[in-house]
Image (spheres, rainbow, N blue to C red):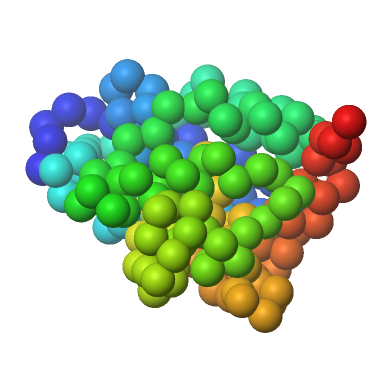
Length: 173
């Protein structure tokens, strides 16, 4: 465990409270639709997990969340995120950030996007182990049948995110 202090803040969003935990440099370590830190800290890799978290009223990253909620879907794209795992998961999380808002992938398409088309279960695992919800948009991956599949923060939150992104996605020229 790292001894560096981290900070957290919670903001209201249409699907519920959204909490973010950031490293001292502002990189997101964990985020999700909860106001309970005990739901977020266990998903942070042990090498990155902070020894203590200081709750604060506001963090700059919440400006990106507010902009996203207001319809600027690209606001979350520039937020620094720090996750750690093996090479496939780390690569898959980077690839997730390239899935366009309003154009979700299936798990099979996501596996192919990761360069391993046969690794559908591994791709689903990357979504399940993602600690930085919203910023690493695992909600943009659907079941092969087009169904929602799972989501750590509940399918109603996933449905809201997908509907919100569809409503605000840039129309191709």
